[in-house]
Length: 163
Image (cartoon, rainbow, N blue to C red):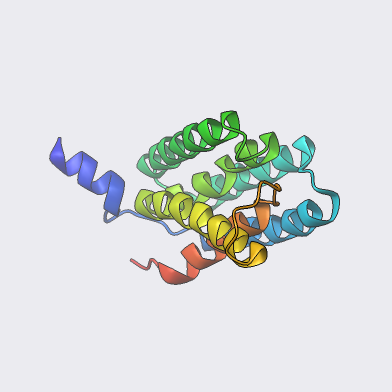
């Protein structure tokens, strides 16, 4: 049982790194970040399209069945954390729904990276808010997708997984 959990979190011998899918998701996240700053909304259809592209990309790259499990677990954790923050009014509904996509793709690579992405995205958002407010507490909502996109890029660069 311990071997299964260790392999799920850290990877295993038959592990495939979905580099192309991660790259496509990063580009999609950057586009959505620009749109989020410009229009202050994340459209549902854009989230569905990006998730569909991620699922098809992972399937085409031939990831191992255990990687699918890691992707689902990490995306469920991300959704629950973001949903709880959405209920508190910290994040919008589009941010909550979009959180599934990068967590899914990075969780398919190595679940630890997907979990690190959640922490990094939320920390970057706090950092952006602190810097933009000059250190004062401000109740103005800020777009969160730029922090998510930057965290996705940082996760893919900080953890270059190669087996």
